[in-house]
Each structure stands twice: as structure tokens, then as C-alpha cells.
Image (cartoon, rainbow, N blue to C red):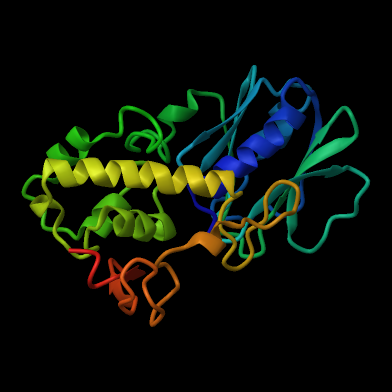
Length: 271
């Protein structure tokens, strides 16, 4: 599933090619995504300039003077800039066609993604308004985590993946950050000190920054806006490495289910 680094990589890839371009048409070939594509998108976006492309958590926001297109890549979605003349393939469900002859093409084999339209402030949309701070911004800090975690018995891994606590830290990067911070993923969130939360915040930022620089993580079918895979998978320390030797101490990496998600950790390095 594309996580924050993959979405940020996509955002950075498409923004220079879309900003300042005028939309001539929107071609919705398959409206049955996770939520139905609203008819207003194809009716209201054509004729408008794309003023900005930004990210909030795992959502991409395409701004125009009359509204925002909200995109989510779901489990296996991708966005690419292609010629409008390139024939669409089976899972290419939506094109946003520009006046220069190119289009933003949304592909989603599993149809768990979304393409929504709002004329209101997108940050007040029901899918976005309750999200926590961005993990790469100053509002995400140890004091914030420590305060929210008080008397919480939930595992720190699940706590870190709660979008109302911090926006967009998914399964892969939560496992990797907890390893770097030396925190066992099953430890109750309320039993972690402020000092350890400071290490965790630094680890989250380091892992996400490194993943963005590497273009994300390709585990199954993520590609960036140019169709290239992400290479952070070559740097994973624990995720997906069950039974292999820990790079740090040599102990065997273990796996368990926490919050219905596969979790990888080193039993010696993480306490």
C-alpha cells in the first residue's frame, strides 16, 4: 500500500507538470472506486487552472480556483503524467486532461483508491479534518505524543499508526522507526517516557526522510509518477525480514500481529 513517502514522492513528481496548466476535460472511465467518483468532478474542473498540488497525510490535493480534487492511491494505485493519446489500459480509471496534450492518469487495479471533489476547504473534508499533525512538521513532537499517550494501554505500534495521533505513518515505517528508537512495538503507549518519545519522533522523521529520498518502498506494485519503483526496500532493517539476522545485534528478527497488522522487530534491540 502506498504510504506517506510514496505519496510525497508522487506529489513532488507531478506538481511541476500540473501547476499552471489548464484542465480541458476529465475522463472518468470507472466511477466505482472506494467511494463513487462524483459527477461534479467532470462537470466543474474542466476549464480551470491547477493552482497547486499538495499532500495531507496519504491524500493528494489538486487545487483549482473553484475546488479541490482529492486523490487517494488506495492499496495499489498510482498516478502518472502521460500523453492524452496513450491508450488507457484495463485499470486506468480516470484521466485529468491538460491543454498541453498531457494528462494525469489514475491507475488502481484494486479500486480501493479515491477521486473526490469538494468546493469547500479540503482540510475540513470528513476524511481529513480529524487527522493529527504531519510527522515531518514541528507540531509532531515528543510532548504531543507523550500527552496523548497518558493512561493509554494500546500498543505503541498501533498508537503511532493512528491517524488522529499523527497523519500518515503506515505499517512499514512504524516498524522501522520503532526499531531505530529501540522501542518494542507491543509496549503500551502510556508506559513510554518523554525521553523515549523524543527518540521515536527523531526516528520517524529520519525513516520517512530517507524513504522519500529513495523514492518510497516497492513491496508489491508501487511505482512513482514516472513509473519507477521505490528503492527504500533495500534499506529496511526489520520489516519483512522475519528470521533474518538483525543488522545491529545479530539476533533473529521476529514477527507478530499487532492491531491486525504484521509487525517486525528485534527482540534484543527493542525493549
